[in-house]
Every structure is written in structure tokens, then in C-alpha cells.
Length: 159
Image (cartoon, rainbow, N blue to C red):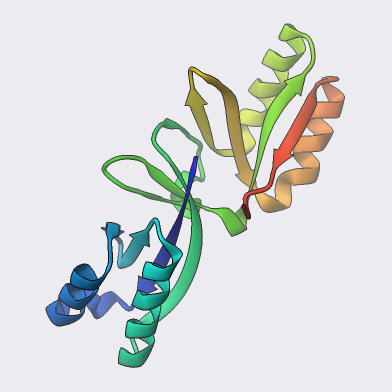
């Protein structure tokens, strides 16, 4: 999991090649999707934001969680941007958790119950699965975990 910074421009940005070139030539652009510039370095995102503000084309600034692979939930499209190499999840709208304890069958049943509430599940063979749900569903996730007598640990997506 890696943090990226997104800067959304007005939809006409693609029709203004001089701004696209200015940003591409003065930053290390990770990707560009749906009028959103994606950067690994915050200072490149801040530069882009200032250029867009000066031009009256700035829309919004995002912090995103970049993940190379996983499973999309039903509401994925509302909370993520898909790139050619992975997905970027909007951290301010989501909570992330892992399962840290419980017996195997209870965990299996809890995960089955979680499925209808998940935006995305990061799966990495070397690490435990990380589950992403809408931020306002955190208490529901805790309730499901308690009902199945399993333990979950929520991750801090602000770091």
C-alpha cells in the first residue's frame, strides 16, 4: 500500500495542452486519470494545484491509497480511480481493517458477511488481507466482528 496525491482539474484541462505540458515537464507524474493528476510526491501535487488555481482550473486535492491488486466491491467505482497498474482509493472516504484473530470458521463467515459492505479487498500472498469499507460503516464492521467473535484492527489511512 502506497500513498499518492491527486489533484483534480476542471474537465477542460485535456483541451488545454499547454497546461498539460507545463505539469508533465515540471513534475514526476505517476498517472493521469479522469482529469485527476496522480503523484507520489506531495510537492509535485502542490505545484500542480498552484498552477491550476492560477488558471482557474483547480477542483479538488485528494490523498489516495494506491494498491496494485485486489478484489473490487459493488461500490468500488464511487470510491476509487482505476489506473493501468492498480487502483487508487480515496482515503478520506474509507476505513481499512485487517482480521487479527478468531477461529477459522468464524473468520470465514464474518468475511462472507463483510463482503456486501466492502469497497475493495487488497490481497497479497505475503500479508494478511486488508479490507476497505465506507467510513460511515465502521461501527457496522465492528458489530459484525463482535457477532462472529473475531478481532479486527483498523488501519490509519492518514499516514
